[in-house]
Amino acid sequence: MADSTTSRVSYTLDSSLDSVNKIEHTAEQYAQRAGFDEERIPYIAMAVREAAVNAILHGNAYDPDKHITASFETTSEDLIIRITDQGTGLDPETLPDPLAPENILRGSGRGIFLIRAFMDEVNFRLLHPGTELTLIKHRTPAKSGT
Amino acid sequence: MSMTVATRQVDGVTILDLSGRITLGEGSVTLRDSVRDLLAKGQKNILLNLSEIDYIDSSGIGELVSAFTAVKSAGGELKLLNLTKKVHDLLQITKLYTVFDVRDDEAHAISAFTN
Image 1 (spheres, chains in turn yellow, brown):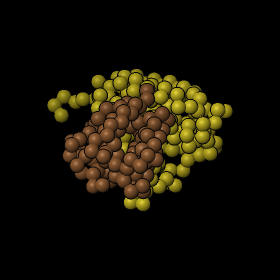
Image 2: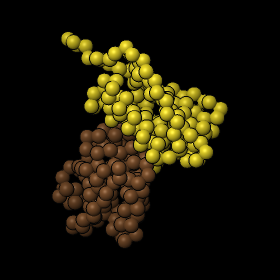
Image 3: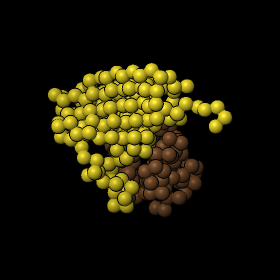
Image 4: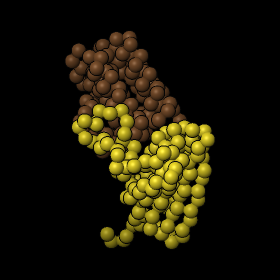
């Protein structure tokens, strides 16, 4: 069952694929601690991975002088992950729909779509410079008799 | 964690037995290079055995799509074999399940190649 403790930890990392793997692994651990079941944890971790890839690849463009931050917060209600980059900023309204027939055979452009598919809430905030992506998954403790 | 590829030939079809993760970086690049090498050698009937692929991200999905279109453009066929539940679900969510020819029996998959 979910507890009522709120905790938040933040990491600052290089713009590298190694950072992506670290963030994904950390997301798995936090999702596990938050009480999500074995079915959901890989998809939460995948959403967080996609957000980290987006920050490093499209945001910071692997610039060694730029960093990303990843914060993990567990409240009584939610698991909240925030990923920020120092790039030029991402406007989600400009993203093409990967399910549209004209885009279905594109070799990229599915990351944000998958994040939205696996998380309950996804919010974008422009930081000037950079983007903060907030991913929220509601904790759903089992209720007896339901 | 990386991806490994083993190649087999059966009745004119090249089967790539993939194992590991297809993600941004090593896995995606390995898949791209493997398919590119086969096309360069004129091997255009390709069956990707994904039974040992336990993880794929959006980059990996994109690489599967790129491989599919590259093989098709070269006049060949690319089919997928033995999807794990996770990969199956991802292809469903992204509406790609019906784009690919997905098979769960190797012999039937091989006989389904038209060239």
